[in-house]
Image 1 (cartoon, rainbow, N blue to C red):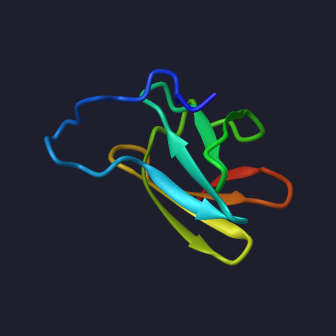
Image 2: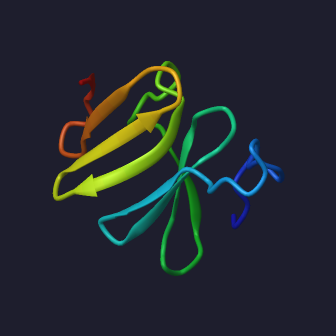
Image 3: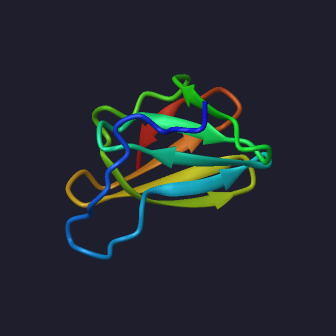
Amino acid sequence: DKIVPNFPTTRRPAGAPYPAFVYDNKLYLQNRHNYLYTIASDGKVEPFDKIDLMAVKGWSYLVDEGTVYVGTSQNGIYEINMTNWKVTAL
């Protein structure tokens, strides 16, 4: 499947980037319900449910080796360990 379910077609504020990051040769996209999807180089889209972001509501991502940092508009900064999928507030 090459469709990301519930992917927002409009952004607030207008023109804001979509929450996304690249890790291990895959593009990770966050939909409006805070679920992550991976997009492989061949275009294959798959849900990625190993990381629970429901309480995080990520707005932006920064990748540093095996760690992904999540910036939010209301909940501070979080760290995702991409080895064990643990999400921790900083």
